[in-house]
Image 1 (spheres, rainbow over the protein chains, first blue to last red):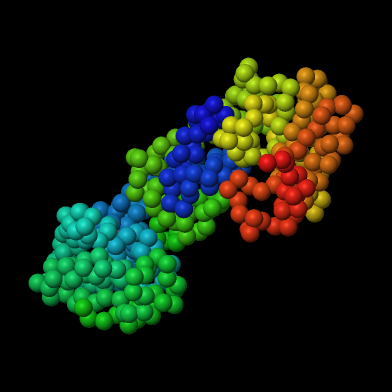
Image 2 (image 1 turned 180 degrees about the horizontal axis):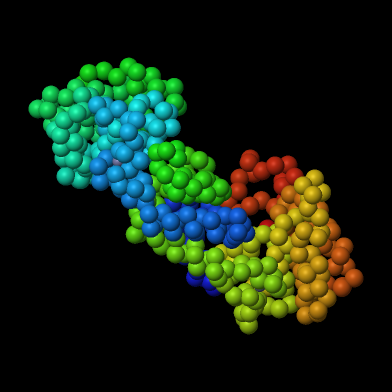
Length: 200
Length: 200
Ligand SMILES: [Zn+2]
Ligand SMILES: [Zn+2]
């Protein structure tokens, strides 16, 4: 291919192919679309990526992704301070916010405990979560973790660590399909799962 | 979403969602992947896009996409000048080059005639194709157009326009794809494969 298109286009295709949802063939199509729609798509995307490279940061408080630290959610005065929703990933936080079912603060763990994959507590923001709760002001921690084995293992681990603080720990109601991931659920299911949260 | 992540990330997601193969959900996943893999993926992709914006051009001779004009293929002294392969799209040119089956020059039409979609001859590079052939030196034009109604309409139109030049015009053979199973082929393909049968 290098002899056909020059190394610059080949490099663009290779990088696009590393995005989730794009394989080598769709990366080529995406590159062609970008080049054909130079002004409407390639230039704006290039600029948006440059801005993201320069400005996007991980919130040092909650682990959300934003262009300010603390993030918009941590700084929002209208949020309920007593309610803390723990999620595995920023995608799950976004899913809950899209559903608009809870007015709370968040804590992004950055994954789940997974001994088989070598992911231990030190790889997640569990210490930071315990510290946030220990600071006081939080009356309930909602564990909004995926209904997977690793998600539930992590829920148990976090619950044990939070026990000394006396905080109420709840989890999403069943209604989250077993083995399902939050990011794939519709708003109604997410709303029902928040409403029917049960003591852990 | 704007209130959750800031407009910069939302803008990135919206632009990614306009790439073929990515919908709104996969665009969000792609954006998160980019942000998480900042140094390994987002910064290099941003840079590759910026380079593409600055350097990628459409070859004024053949319609190929490259970082030089005339393109690498038009400038390649080892290519057969007498053979001109006409394709609809740069993606088709790339497919033929990956297959490495023909040592020729190319001509990219930029689409097919499609009266229903309002695509007429003036929207394609047909004039330029006729001019290239009229300049002399080409002994055969291979129409490597898609076996669709629009592709075949375009093939007929181009063949008529090239008739006065006296150049030999051929088209790709129809038949059973290599590795293809008869059971999955449509009747038109089977009929063509029978008609063009060859001695065993
Ligand atoms: Zn935050
Ligand atoms: Zn060219």
